[in-house]
Image (tube, rainbow, N blue to C red):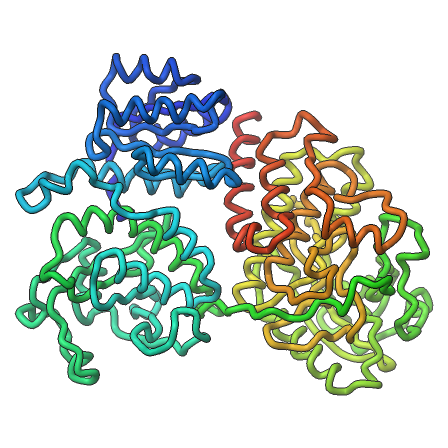
Length: 637
């Protein structure tokens, strides 16, 4: 259950790629395991004959399906409880994972491998393997750690959007898998020593709207006891245990009998919560359920960590992002300019109100900000270098090209959204200091970076090294995740909107097109919102968009920075470009640069999938795959 103590084991890694096997070995050795490496199925089979192992990590993508053949061979000799096998395969090969489970695999990871997830799953299986066999578990022991449909559970957790829905999804899974009547999951607020949850037992479906948080003291009840002891606890009859708080039963009429409570640890080991399952339908919980919990707990903890974000030192539920409109049609729509990419007049915006010449503002004062120079001009407005005369701070002032004097309601809605973005306060998003109006135009005052933008970097270097690209996009994903957890959709991810600092940090900026859930499109109907080279297919078609549209744009940005060209270059018209996003195959960055790691292709392919449901479910998932690349780059250095 992500326990504090590391359980070292003898691990056989069967991985054909030397760099990947070296990286896996490094991390497993750091966890206290002893590691053997095989680069082929034949070598793996030979080592299995010569040595005794506690667990096998098997790459299914060996040539000629040799990984599957070896898995069959292992299962012909060892039952799952004696020699657990964790398989790995490319993310798009979900059918391979299903087939491996049918052959007796215990667990899996997808490639690029999420190292913290892999380590947690190995620890869980070693814990199951170490559990003693008793009379009540002897019949199920041969199948230990194979009873639960883990890929299906992962999919359920992945598809649950928003904090409340994730919490309810965890509860539903625990209740169903453990064959119980009810389940609850709590996030531990360490600063206030409280447990936080939402109502999980109601007539609402698990996909219902967000609910208010319920807080309780972390000193109360069996859940609090499991948290304080940091260990699993089984109670056959709650009413015979003094730690049980009967007030809930008294209020609802529910009769709690058997209880199993267990702590939840983040992949890094931090204690972040506790789960509690009530009333097994056949009586008390037993060791068989504990084995299941060992594998479920890391997954539940991962979902629990995504269900909350910290704002002003307080935990808040992640918001559910509802779909909002992109554009009305795929017709030849007037689009904003694409800064720095092409001098194509067909891509210039002409259906927006005229604003003052930005160069004429140099030397003038807007509010308390004295303009010193023009930093850039784009389709949504222009950016000025300015100084806050009140406190002497250098800032960037963006003037937005939307005429709010004609629509006061739209103006107020946009102002509210800008204020919302100003509350993100994340190290990978540009801080918004102020917002105001100047001659019927809105301006936003932002943090000024000293390293230019990712687009400027691309212009200055013939090809940005891939490991530098990974660092930049990773930071941008962190910033995007912070916005998404607050319910915001950016809708204009591109290299020009990633600010770089002199220390190498990247910050996501220009949330001028961002929308919160259930708001109308500020650009008006019939207008494309975004930059065409990076727009998602649903954005191009004018369909509803959610946060996964931003994932697509981040993938397009990643591709552009890796290769030096946008995903669909040299299209004859804007309409052709939009159609390519909708219909053309996802481009392979290695077709332009064969020296790029194969994982770059996998990340581009997943993030830019045509169907939103085939993309990463969150910016965090994309970041986790990028982390593997960062680790490869570190070893290469």
